[in-house]
Length: 326
Image (cartoon, rainbow, N blue to C red; front, top):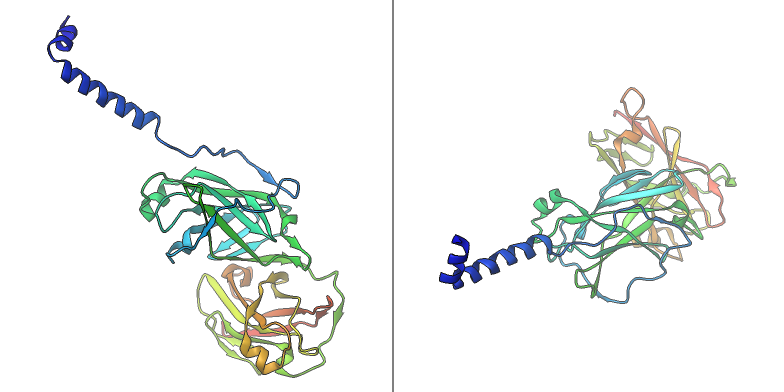
């Protein structure tokens, strides 16, 4: 009876209270969320996309946090900033988080571009840590992963060296593209024909410009005093010096393992100095975990070797750099 008395004597209060309760209900139970399924979706050649949705492209203005895409792990290797080290596994899982970094909010979808093909990732996994760290305005559902067939990374020249990510914004009207990510593959050259390098010019066609912060003595082919950092940065240039041509591929051998490293960075200075008539994409620039260069006792290896593969598929004799005083 007391409840009926309140309704009769104070109808305005009752209406306001009802509206307030309804609003709370809608906010709690009907708030917008991602409707993505988080179950595993394996992508192969049979179900890969051939193009992105036909939306306008929006350039990313912010330079922070890798322009909104961060790779945290891959079940097939190691993630180091913008470099992914990929092992020989048949299936690959790449995971991390991605946001519309300019607007500080989640995207609606994410795609990975590989060899002009597009893989749609699973997006919308809750990441409250990222929301707090970046100061996101709304949902924390910004985690993603891709689960795909390694063969999608193969192109006409072997394994691709770069992948790229594309976000679709919340309004599903714009495509936001990330910075490229370089891929490094654990590889093999045992099935390739070999040849010797005839020319002694330009140190047989490969020069280190930078190697782990150490002192490089090009004529002796030595690297002295590599810095004590978790990631080792190696950069320089390489060419088929006998034929004055760019390479097809470049490999780095460390402690008995061989890795195909990214090659093709613009080096117009080398093109002019060496007299290359074709592309100026003669540089290499790679970041690798220090653990790859360590022996079983924790000391650094005493040398590294580079294998140059020419346009005809011949692998030239290794070019060795000794690591001393490390």
